[in-house]
Image (cartoon, rainbow over the protein chains, first blue to last red):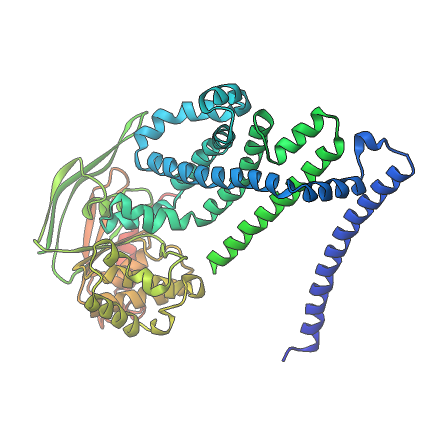
Amino acid sequence: MFSEEHKRYLKKIRRNKFFVRFVQILIIAILLISWQLAADLGLINTFISSSPKAIILTIVGLYNDGSLFHHIWVTLYEVIVSFVLGTIIGILIATLLWRFTFLAKVLDPYLTVLNSLPKVSLGPIIIIVAGAGTGSIILMALFISVIITIIDVHQAFMGTDSNKIRLLESFKSSKTQMLFKLVLPSNYNNIISVFKVNLSLTFIGVIMGEFLVSKAGVGYLIMYGSQVFNLNLVMTGIILLAIMASLMYYLILFIEKRLSR
Amino acid sequence: MILSIKDLRKIYHTKQNEILAVDNFSFNLKEGEFVAIVGPSGCGKSTILSILCGLDEPSSGTIEADKNLKFGYMLQGDNLFEWQTIFKNCLLGLEINKEVTKESKEYVKKLLKTYGLEEFMDAYPSNLSGGMRQRVSLIRTLATKPDLLFLDEPFSALDYQSRLAVSDDVYKIIKKEKKSAIMVTHDISEAISMADRIIVLSKRPSTIKSIYEIKLTNRSTPINNRKAKEFSKYYDMIWKDIDYHV
C-alpha cells in the first residue's frame, strides 16, 4: 500500500515517540530508585525527606484503615463541585458583560482589583460567613477560579471576528442569536483552554481551603501530617494530588477530543 | 428605480475630531442594474454600503427603497463558519430569520447544485478552495432571496487568478438569478468588466466625481469584457478621475 520510503518514515515516527516515552519513564525510575537508595544508605534524613517505600506503606496503611478513598473522594467532590460551579458562573457573567457593554465598563476596575487580590486573604471572612465546612472550601475555590474565568472568557468573546459579527448584523440577527450562532462556537477552543486553567486553579483553591478548614481530604492529610511531623503523610498527600490532577487533566483532554470530532 | 439615494452625508466622530466621510451622495438604481463604486482607498466607499444596508446611520440624507425590497450583503472575505458544514453555512441567514422550511432548504440545495457545490454540501469550509468558498458565501447571501446585493470588495482576499475566475462566477450567478447589485471595489478593471454603471468617488470627503455608463461591444462575462476595445478607454478616464498620487 505504502512505498518503502513511507514505511521507513512511519517507523521513524513510531520509534521517536517510543524513545520519548522511554526517557520519560527512565527519569522517574532513576529519581525513585536513587531516592530510595539514598534513604536506605542513610545519605538523607528520611524523617524529613521520606522515601518511596515509606510513601507506599503509608498509602497501604490508609487503604487498610479505609480512609484512603474517603480522603480522595472528599477532595475530588470539592474539586468537581467548585469546577462546575466556577465554570458555569464565570461563563454566565462573562456573557452578561459581553451583552451589556455598560456593565463591563462599570465592573472593569472591580474585576481588576479582585483579580490581583490574593484570594487566600479572604479565608478568615469566608470561614466566618460560610462556616467551618465544605461550603467554605468550595467558596474559596470559587473565588480563585471565577474572576479569572470571567476576565478570560469576556476577553475571548470580545475578540470575536468583527467581520462575522457584521455578517450576522446584515441578517438582522438578535444578540442572543449572535451568542449561540457565532460567539460561543467560534470561541470553542478558548473555552476549552479556560477549562484547563480553571481545573488547576480549582485544585489550588480546594487545597488552600482544606488547609484553612477541613476534617478530611488530601489537603487535610498534608496539613495534619505537617502538624504531627509525619512527613511520610505529607509526601503521600502530594503524590496523591499529583495523580489526581493529572487524571483530571487527561479527562478534559479526552472530552475535548471527543467533542471536536 | 428600486433604490433612490439623496444627499447622503456621513460624519464620523472620534474624540480628537470629526471626519466628514461622505458628502452630497445621490444616485438612483434601476432594477437589474449592476453598479460599481470605485475610489481611492479609505475614501468611504464601504461606509456608503454600510449605510445603504442599514448597518450604519447616515448623518443626513434620505434613502428610499421599493417596498418589499430585500437586501443581501456580501462583505470582504467569505466569513464562512469553520465549525459548520457548507450546507449549514448556507442556511445561516435563513436560520436567523427563522425561515428554514422544506422549500427554503430545497432552494439552497438547488443553488448549491447549480453552482457546482453539491458534492461539498457536507464538507467543511477548510476543504474548499478560495474560489469555492466565495461561491458558498454568495449562495449564503442568495439563500434569503434578496433582490439587491451589496458587494463590499468581495474578492479582495483572493489572488489575482482566482479573482478573475470568481468574479466571472459571481457575475454569472447574479445575472442568472436576475439580481440588482451595488459593488464597492478599488480595482478599476474589475469594475469595468462587471458593471453597467460606474460611480467614481473623490478622496475624502467622498463625493461623486463622475458617473460612467459602461458600453462595451459584445458584452458577455467579465473575463471576456476585459477584451472589449472600449475597455482601456474607460480605464484611462477613470484612472485620471481617481487621480492617484503615489
